[in-house]
Length: 414
Image (cartoon, rainbow, N blue to C red):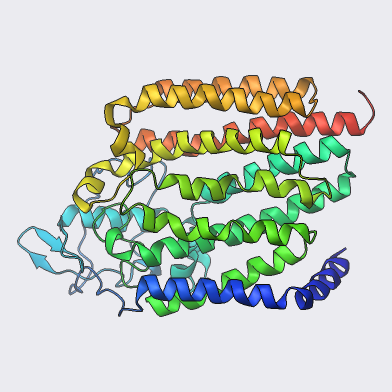
């Protein structure tokens, strides 16, 4: 099977050489224009004479309750430099943080490294750039692709091997392209990340990865993503290429609109469309369009809650989001989005003639989402993060219902 994929990929690489080169040049020129290839920012603290034992300050939303931090690990070595101005520490951007707040950010990063501690030390900042220690984003990017693949496979009764092959390739693609998206975001947002406690420790903002290094790494990720794309049916290449402008737009839009999520969430929902050609099914817009809309609305719900984590910093830094635009009206708006999402999802299922398991999964998943919206306290960052990550389970439930429907019908039970 691997040899077959490789042969298909090599054959298509020659056919796609020209458009692929155009795409890569577009990536490079856009990032160069936006980043300016400035020198990497000075690390936001100066070296001390040695590690000073500090109590971990309790700062809501920075360190998860399950996290522990081993300050003796190699990852703790000279990542941060102390530059004391009274009780404040100043970043390259000129933003001053209390010493305890920056120390908490450092401890949170070290505590959440998890399995990345086992990587060679020079690799760790690049793994962090891809957010490999935080798989939630990769899964939220993958889930709509699984929805699209499964709905399409159900509609044409695609062979199980074809469906599983598409799921495997989309899983690899989600991991790679989510990492590329995070790299683009960190390049363009490096001076904004310096002004928010939760993001001040990101690799570029903290000076552990320079902008030229990040751009080179981004190019490698794009080539890897292209290799995966070429293993899919040829129609996926052009449909996938149409999503690239949305990848670049999100970090720029947050500077002048309160709705920057629209750009990134269009990209997150694109998998609902790509799933159809991935299993050699025609792009049935009667099904794909409401499915796309349902995922977009769902993403707007959890991403708005996510944005509430940083709202006190975003106001000072001039970063715009729906959390700031909606303010105290957020909960009623989320209920409205929820209602539209449920209607869109059920419409897609009805038009695709889905079976009972689809509706059972929908009932369970949407009851769970309603409870999450009702319970979350938008002024408590840890609760916002918990709801954001909890949406992974919601997405799996919705997918599981439609996948069981597909398997049952494939087996000839109805």
